[in-house]
Length: 303
Image (cartoon, rainbow, N blue to C red; front, side, top):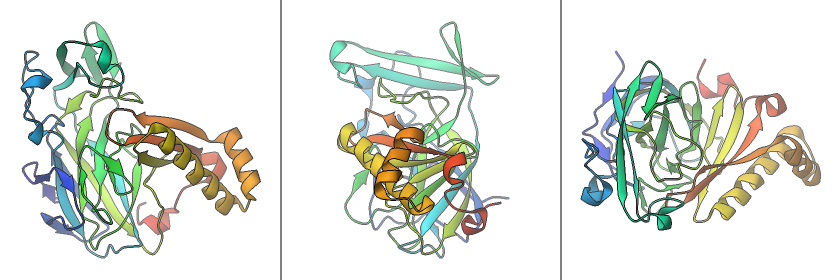
């Protein structure tokens, strides 16, 4: 039976000295039970943002100490399964999200989830479950669980779904893995400040890659790999994600900087994950046909 980290064991900040709630020996499968990003406070469509206790928003389960993980390594976290409940919620309102200045009121929807769809009015949206918050203890400083940076955090990147692997740079002994803010479905941008927020059970497989590190998190699926960059402005994040991709191409394919830059303009997609958190998140997607796997299966410890 896989170890379980219970939802009651959660944090609201990523810090260098987070106190572990569990210890595991990789490679290992582990289950994270999660509370929804609104802290379970939305029960009906009469519950709106103005009534929330914001000190309870964005709980993330953990941290888990990974034996053998040291600064300079990377943590490989493969998302094996994301369990869906029967309902989720989405909220928005005045001042919220990309168009918040255009609204004066607040709104909540409770969305049914059934037979692989999220039901929105008379529309059926295919579920695509994903993990919004996943990260490790940072090198320095304190980051709210609603903010993303080099340690991961609230990247709100829809590619972090089942069968994807997230690679996180390790800054502290044991890495101290935290996970939460699960969505049944979310589009790039998360423009209204919320997705279909759900409580969930997420099964992951954890491995450690020794003495190799990326400057930023990377997510890989069968289509390819994406560098995930979160910075105060979307322009900064887009530029840095592009830089990461170009430098990676130059090194992996033994190209000159100019060649790598041109190749990126032909084959690398620069995308936006989210526009609504304190740090905005961009991603540079490198297709599998271009560079293969980010790490080989033998390096990650995954099959």
